[in-house]
Image (tube, rainbow, N blue to C red):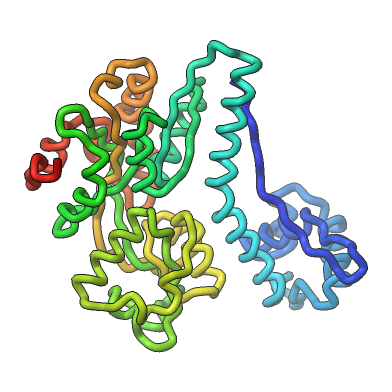
Length: 362
């Protein structure tokens, strides 16, 4: 199957219509990662002279410096350059899952013309880092995957409507397991539905390094001066937050930013790290990647839902082979806050949710 790659690229136009070089924006991100222009050039094998020319050109276009030059300390980013870097992180975090879904759709359309007999596995899932690793591994093994990242509720509904073969969604452990199951139950069938375990992961609050506003619980999100960034209403994380706020008797209307949302955990982390918000709820992995503090609040299991009759198909067998592979499980365990416990295990609904009377929901 032919692969389609789409990457987000952005720039800024000055008053005369000239654009900043996209390479300059990449260079500033490299400086932020490696600590100085010289180190960045060494690591990326970029000519220092060329890099410095790009910086000077950008400073001329913007009318402000992009690098602080200190004798003996090299070069560091100015506040303007830092803002440009974080804008790039936010763009990438927000758009990458959407572009990956679009790439997958285009691959499918091309396959119909270039290889009409090609066989494609359709996966609709809420965006998560373990399921991302799964799709990457399947693709690397030569499996054709049509992936679409959607909210958890949308993914489960898609399976019920016959629009995909696997639906990815999370369910919190503990007191919120029953209401979360009820949230998805109308799209499940006790006799037909099967649960495939992928991972257990930590959910919590992502806050600035050092937690300057002392945000330790969802109740603290309602404190004066705290700005929050949410996930979209169809996501499992949004539902989890609703459950926690209800328990804490906190009216969402008291939380500044409750109705402002991002579509991935990484986008939430980038939003907080850029200083646009003081806190966001999400999994631990992007929090660590963006050097944020993480306040654990809940554990949840991430599942793939399928129909029993599809378990022996080549598509699902390929997925199970990956999930049960120790090398793949090691990759999941390396993700901060993730555990591959029971990865690849198959359950009926009643087996997966043994503390819930499944029949009461159907």
